[in-house]
Image 1 (cartoon, rainbow, N blue to C red):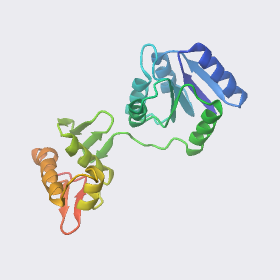
Image 2: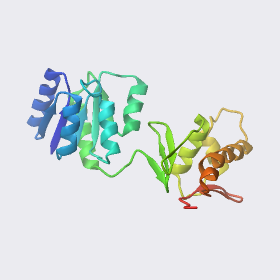
Image 3: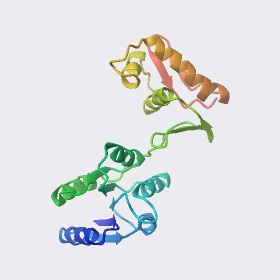
Image 4: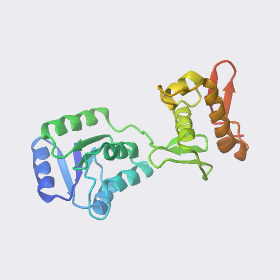
Length: 225
């Protein structure tokens, strides 16, 4: 198995390379962001191990760029940034795992082997239903290349519907997943926000993709017109 390590701390990179080679892996090393990105683009790697804070280009930018180019090589982030939002950002952009420094080499090896067992299925980070696209990491929505501005609640509602595209989703399920369980809400609130979404993602584009299923709930379809 061939690995790429993108790490600017030379001693760390050399230690990882030596350890992983001793465990039977072929290992390449890049010491900055741009060279790491080029290596990941053009090399045939089974896993990429990437730091976040890199010269020239951050690990976040590398992950974002590779995923936008539909490169689904499994990626493990190793970083001294241990905040929960740092980890969330990396995973939302398309990383497969995240370990904070200092880390256990034994745990890294176990997670590496787990990733290799799973392989690299195509798993786009951008949700698409017809010509409607939603990027959870960038918090953007487009229809046919046109940007659509949504409130946080509208965005969450659309994201859940897109993750369950072509399926009927009940009002109760939408309340449970989009609104806080502790909030004083009513199913009528779902109807109100469905109306808001229709006025933003369907009506201006002459579409009817967000449909009401009487007595059941709502279904988002890839309706062309």
